[in-house]
Image 1 (tube, rainbow, N blue to C red):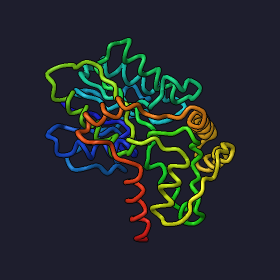
Image 2 (image 1 turned 30 degrees about the horizontal axis):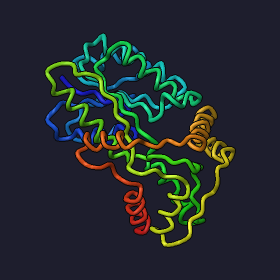
Image 3 (image 1 turned 90 degrees about the horizontal axis):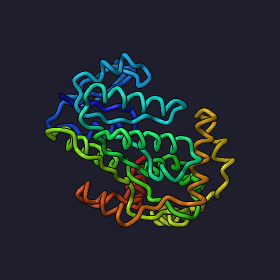
Image 4 (image 1 turned 120 degrees about the horizontal axis):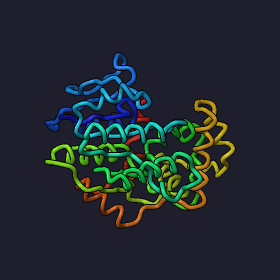
Amino acid sequence: MSILVTGSTGVIGSQVLAHLQGQGVEVRALTRSPEKARFPAGVTVVKGDLLDVDSMRQALAGVSTLFLLASNAADELTQALQTLNLAREAGVKGIVYLSVFKAAEYVDVPHFTGKYTVERMIEQCELPATVLRPAYFIQNDLRQKDALLTHGVYGMPIGSRGLSMVDIRDIGEAAARELLRREKADGPLPRETYALVGPDSLNADAVTAIWSEILDRPIRYAGDDLNVLEQRMKAFAPGWLAYDMRLMLRRYQSDGAVASADEIERLTTLLGRPPRSYRDFAKAAAAEWAKV
C-alpha cells in the first residue's frame, strides 16, 4: 500500500514529498507530465489528472492514503469532489485534504467556498480525513523582493486587521505527519481538523516594521488599493483568478484572519514545536537577497 500525493509539482506538494522522504513508506506522486517531473529519490511517478476519471482510477489502485490538493482553478470543486468519490470507491483508508483558513466564513470568496464545500462532503460522507486549513502563505511575500529592496515599499494590501501567516514548510510537515499517522494505522481513523497558522497577528504596520528593522531602512506600506492588485495579477494570471484574489484580500482588510490561541496550540502539538514566525522568514530572506 502507498501514499499518493496530488499537486506534487507545486509549492506545497513539493514540501509534502520532502517531509515524507526517508519515512519508510511507499510514496507516489501524481503529475500530468511525468517526463518533466523531478522528485526526491524513492518517489514513484504516476501519470494522472484530477479531471480524468480513468487516469485517477488507475492512479488510486493500491493506494491506502491520499494527499488531496486541488489547486485554485475554475473547476477546482469538480476536481476535489470527483477525486474524493474515486478514493472512496478505491477503498482508500486515509485522506489529508488541503482546505483554507476561514473557509466557512469567507462565503463570498470563490475558492474559499469551494474548499468548504469539499469539507462538507468529508463530514457528511464520514470520510476518514484530516482537513488542513492553511492561512496566507508567508513565502508569498518573496514576491515583494524588488519592491522592498528597490523602492522601500511593501506592496501586498493586507490591511490593518491582521493575518496569522503560515510558513509553507510547516504546511508540508503537518501534512506529512498526518499522512504517516493515517498510513501506519491499522484502519481508518476519526476525522481531524487543523488550522495551519503562524504564531503572530500580522497587519501592514507589523510587517513593514519587521522589514524596516531587518533591512535597516524605512519601509512604507503601499496601501489598500485592490484595483492595483487585480490589475497587477492580470499580467500573469487569468482574470477570474485575479478577481478571486481581490475578493480574498477584501475580506482580509475587512475581517482579518487571525488564529486563536487554541488553534496555535493545537498546531504546535501536531508539529512538536511552535510554528515558524514571519520575522524568522524575513531574516532568512534578507540574508539570501544580500548574497546576490
